[in-house]
Length: 308
Image (cartoon, rainbow, N blue to C red; front, side):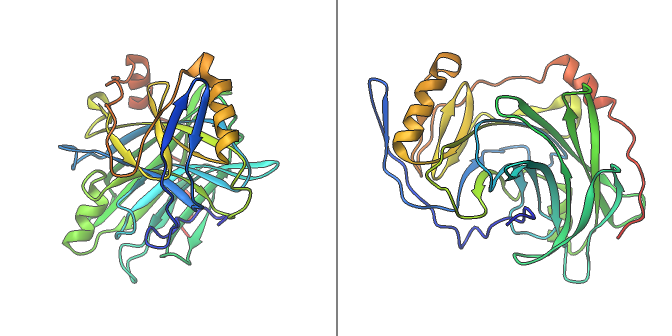
């Protein structure tokens, strides 16, 4: 789906992974799948309102969405953000939130001049935003999401920021404002961890599944910027595991993926492959660098726009 709407979790075709390492060769047993996921453990972080994340794409192909964070999948006012490889010459960052209820729809009151915003449909409905963003393989894409009460009672604002590596500055992409609904919806829009937190890699065009794609993921949660907790535990489905002290998701033909891991070994080390339903040893608990915390405490003022 070029617009970046999330695939239905119920309709996805999962595939299972086993791995055997023999010297430099990795063998995978695969079935076709539309997406693979990381389900993060967020114990004691149910009231988090700040989320910082990193995605490092190491191999890509157009038609792929690298979702950095999907909070409350499929629930009222749940949302998601990340980067897309839309076509041979187009890449984007996207940020969207579902409706709180059929008559309680989100709006976009603040956005970067280059951000495009509208509504999405098909698999739920809500507010969608995207910006052309020329992210590169091997570079770490950094993003930050923060929720807080809106200016009027009964609404919640969710702001999405991305780090511009060229200008070395944070950039506000968009703010989505949700009207609060019933008690469940209020909890849903005011928390990130309580209703589930997922990262995923989705082949939204359903083509070129044999071509290798690989991305590393890291997330931090907290109620304030200077008290963020690193998420060190996750379980997955599809081709997933750990590489370079991060979690990874991958898609591709088994021999070509094996070659890719071998080519990356000198810089990133050997992967540890996960299996669906099992847990791996946690990755290291990294605190956010002090310099990054200062940047997140001094984010740029959002620019108001006429809400659609």
